[in-house]
Image 1: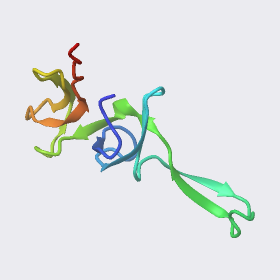
Image 2: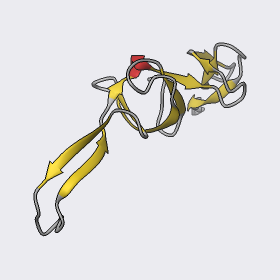
Image 3: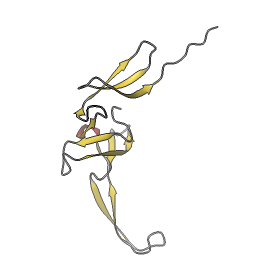
Image 4: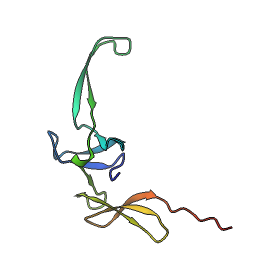
Length: 114
C-alpha cells in the first residue's frame, strides 16, 4: 500500500476536499484509510454503564485510498508515490515530484554463507 499510518495526506474528494490531515489507520484488504477529522459521523447512544450520559459520539469513518494523496515530507507537495530498490535490495517509497526517499518499506535480506 502506498499510504501508511501517520502519513500526512490531502483529501481530494468529498465535503472535506482540500483538507490536510494525518492517517490514523489503514485497512489493506478493503483499501481504505481512516483520516483524522475527515468523514466524521455521529452515532447516537443510549445511557448505559459505559456511557452514563448518553448522547452523540463523533467518530471518523474510513475513506477510499484513491480519495487521498500523500504529502511529501521534503517538498510539502501532494504527490504520487513510487518505489525503488537500491543495490542491496532495500525497497524505498519515493516521491514522484522531488524524487526523495520517503522511508524504507523492506530491508534487504542478508544471505547466509555456508
